[in-house]
Length: 138
Ligand code: 5GP
Image 1: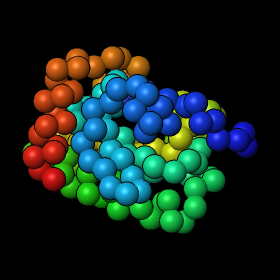
Image 2 (image 1 turned 180 degrees about the vertical axis):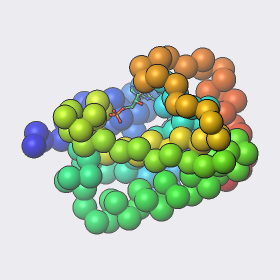
Image 3 (image 1 turned 120 degrees about the vertical axis):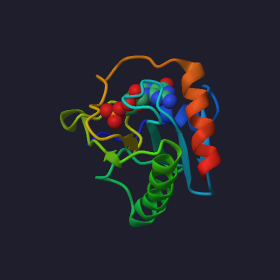
């Protein structure tokens, strides 16, 4: 497995070198909106310390991230009055990973509504409104 690259896009988001729409953070984790949302409220949870993915994460990183994933899953389900929540996590390119800093996708879901296709830029005003709804539910 390759080494962690500290120039990956989420490392830059953590350092505030590129903008992001943050919804929650604590000492160990950050949650922010995905810019190509596959569902309204689609967000990402990452550790603040470096690791590529599940395969090299420490138990402490996983514990911290999963606590925040659960918190944001509950908040986003409430914010969107969703019927369920999908959690996605990909490891290495062959596993579907595109950004090599551990992240979990949190996707509020409604009965019978499929995910939108990947790779489509979202409307930034709508994303900001969705972030505000999630913050309010936290
Ligand atoms: P994965 O590595 O899990 O396959 O996908 C990476 C995710 O990061 C995608 O859902 C993509 O939309 C999201 N993403 C890629 N670049 C950026 C960015 O610059 N900002 C934000 N907020 N999300 C991004």
